[in-house]
Length: 108
Image (cartoon, rainbow, N blue to C red; front, side):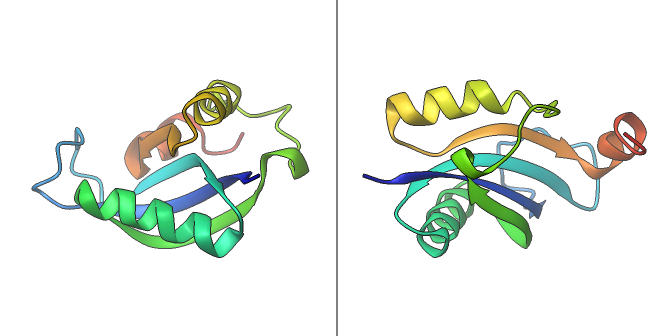
């Protein structure tokens, strides 16, 4: 049985992507990915995003959902986890531009 990995990344979005963009240099993403290992989860997330015109710049963090403390999470990770578990597929908890992140969450 696969684990569910919570992966935090920064990424860039190509102009061809259907993702709504605000001109930010990069975007933050937190996703839940079913996979047998951290490496497999990152590879699956990378593949999914490249198909959508999103390029991973940096993996900021990756750990299993069960190993994390999500009590202060403001990204609605619990909903993404339930969806990923039901569908057994990658589910994004948040996708936020660096401009919005800096404005809304800096200093929390």
